[in-house]
Image (cartoon, one colour):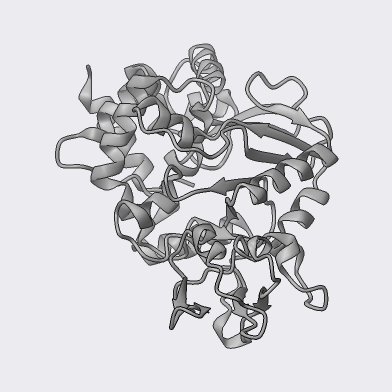
Length: 360
């Protein structure tokens, strides 16, 4: 194995705002070697985030245009790079490892890749979760918010689904990965949601199963019924997926449960509250909170630990006495998410002390 190819690619990926931290024993290179050939890794390490045509890439790296074009098409089919039609031309660019390359392997992941990812996750993945702004943001279960509270479209899972033009569902790569290493959880697998503003965008996708708007809303409800936490990328515009997360399998929430990292996701603009007059201390809600934000007060009624509550609202529908509800946090406690994904990247790069001019 040509370790230099994969080391260069790993360094390139770590230069992105998302990060791809190195390990002491080269676990990141072994993981990349399972996904890329040495030639593919060499080419990917020279790509920019800004999309370019094969001809432009070949000219910039002094390569043969047709050879580069063939390589890029193969890498696109494997989900290793970004690819879009831009002004009528096919263009390509570098993808971060998470969220990007890894999630694109939902249809290709095998036991070996699952083991390699687990090795990398345990050693280094947590480093990428400690930098703000966080990569993921919690959004609440819609029916957990009272009707008299104004909710922005980017704050509502239901609105995000309703405003899309195409919908799809894909198996959760996190639960698939855990199952492949012999640690499955009881939550549904066919639950990760993808969205697009291009009608019928997923009709011919070999991995994503196209849905109607109504079917997508039903998937969202099924996730809520299973006690899963809705999360999206930590920006306001261009939201294109909804993850439905659990602390037993999902990469980010496992950071809290397995790696002991607090605040792995940006909290929502809401916080849970308890009506003490309605709470009878049945404790049903405690099983639904994945953030340890609920506890019994004097064995009588439930209390909310404000610092731990992320405002997901998962516990609210579980209360048979309607004693729980989400309220909007005070304005001074709400940090608006970056507007665009690019804004998020610039903030994240600044927080990491990166000069990303070389990868754009």
